[in-house]
Image (cartoon, rainbow, N blue to C red):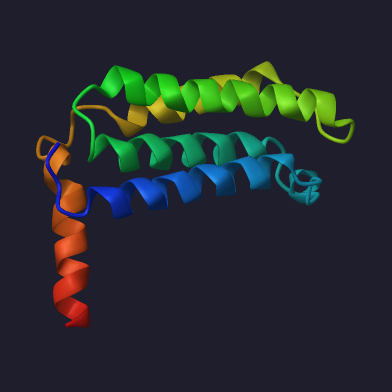
Amino acid sequence: MNLKYRPLWLCLGGLYSILIIYLCLRPSSGAEAFFPHIDKVYHFSAHFFLTWWFAGLFKNRTKIVLYSVLLGAAIEYMQKVSGYRSAEMNDAIANLAGAVVGVMPFMPKLPNFAEKILLKLKTKSA
């Protein structure tokens, strides 16, 4: 896609990917004691937003979903070897579901949303 702010959009997406990795690898906050399986909601939401974000830049939605799923699989592996977190198949399923829903074609003008959002932010700050 030919977006004027593509480098910024990619950089912010990369930072969000790093944030997902950090949040998934830090020691557990204990929230699951109050809300069982809340981590599945976190996984779904994180990968939904990740794929939605990058769908504004790339036409090939399959690659976006693949990136999100591979990132999720890598995180699950890192959790397994960390010694203080555990890998779960249900987390991987939540990652996949979030990634797929994030790129669903119910947003017909999705390829241009990144440019529109950044242009609105620029005009508000000017």
